[in-house]
Amino acid sequence: MSKSYFFLTFLVVLLAGAVAFATVPNPDTIIQLTDSDIVSLDPFWPYSPPSNNIDFQIYESLVQYDASSTSRFLPMLSTNVPSVKDGTILDNGKTYIFHIRQNVKFHNGDVLTPEDVKYSLERLVIFDRSGGPSWMVTRPLTGVDSLADLALKYAGVRKWSDMIENGSLNPEYKDAILKAFNVLDKSIEVKGNDVIIHMPKPYPSLISILAHGICGSYIIDKKWAVENGAWDGKASTWWKYHNPVREKDPLYSIANGTGPYVLVKWQRGVQITLRRFDEYWRKPAKIKNVIIKVVKEYTTRKLMLEHGDADIVTIPQQYIPQVKNIPGVEIVERLPILGEDAGFMTYTINTKGNPYVGSGKLDGNGIPPNFFSDINVRKAFSYMFPYKLYIKEVWNGNAIQPNGPIPKGIFGYDPTIPTYHFDLQKATEYFKKAFNGELWEKGFKMSVVYITGSVTTQQVAEMLSFYARKINPKFRIEVKSEIWASYVRDRLEWKLPYFMTGWFADYPDADDFVYPFLYSNGYYGLTLGKGYQRLAKKVFDPLIEQAESTTNVKERLKIYKELSIKAYEEAAIMWLFQPLGNHVQRSWIHGWYYNPMLRGMEDFYALSKY
Image (cartoon, rainbow, N blue to C red; front, side, top):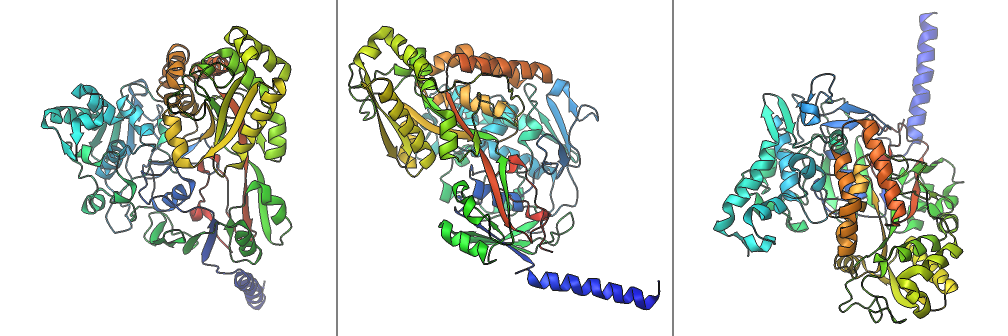
């Protein structure tokens, strides 16, 4: 080949690339449109996809998922993924050793140390904001759900306010505070450049819990955090930083991680701007700027997508047909989502001052507190719901019916577990058995409450109401709504006889579902009343605890199958639907992949526009 011909060929290719680059709007910037703002920039605060998306860009974890896999892991801030084979998982699964990567810089120039890792894990545990993700790390490290609960136990009191009143610690309980912290502190050892985690019992899902993208897995800069008013790292002061008020949290509106992007500005309710971190320990990101705009109206998001003013856009499933034919737009549908929504029956209802239980008695004008403690009522409700019709009409077929507490795609899922199906004849049979036939003769009146604005759960309530009256005109279910804050309050106070909500994977393991769904002291177990807790302690808790610390994979699967079957036999909870997702972007975006554990998060580091 002559030199002149080679030069001409090179020039043509270069010019073609330049032309293509020029036709892509903002080639150095990705603009994402979402419908919700973040709740906090503190990476230990959120259970919120928009917030998780930002944390994912700014902060990093010890290990990361291998692209789209939910079972394979790669090193990140640790240079190893602990394993028995290489000698970094010891003591029959109770000890994990992480070799911390050296010469990694935080965005402010500080260098990552093993002490930062220890501080981050301990701060997450003591942070323990109400409804937050701290429990995921607290349980494997300490064997309890909350460090505060451990302190209460040592102090011999029932409530946090018994120890700490008006912002001051009663000196009488100082030893309890120190003793509780010591349990945590002993679980994380720094030895040279290693961080060694010691657990009271094996916890096979620990690696999943510490993976990048999981709430609370992120490593922060201890020096920077302390300088900005966060916990000072002392055993005697942790109680001051427990369960903070969101906007009073010192890290609420600032950020400093080791990730590929630096926070430039958070304009609340408007947008977040990120800039590439050029001193990133890996190669700098291909995209220089990321702008995430909050655009609540779907029609505005659609127009910006159509005009090329946005690159990645949140589109509700029901509107996907409207964007399918837009030139230059790529849509990926039926993406598996690792989560499910359920209908919860409160076994012991608080009828005092409760507008949702009618008379509060089994007299035809209400329901008694133990209405759902009768297994016949639970089975009747389970057969009364038209699962397939609901998925077809409400979700346009973009969902599947779960068969228990473990969704499809999660370790522990078993396709052979039976499901309840729509059968009004069976529902009638069980209603006639309930309360020795008295329920069928007298009827009942109650409310099913959904969150204001939630169309999908409103439809569940309306279908239950329709088919209950069809079975027996004396069965009256009123459909009512509450705003989120009221809904949460009434659920925690056992005032909602029947409510709908869901759980989405924190980590890809059955433990993350059977514990919140079924355990007596789990996220939902605490909201279903004493009747449920009695059942759970007898039927579910022993199996959950056994599976939690079993390292043999086959044995764990066997236990989870038994749990799922028992949940079916008890009609413990109604498993309503497991949704399927979508992704909408302009075709000039390259490098996108889907990992169901990173729901709501984009890996901007992997993306380019040319």
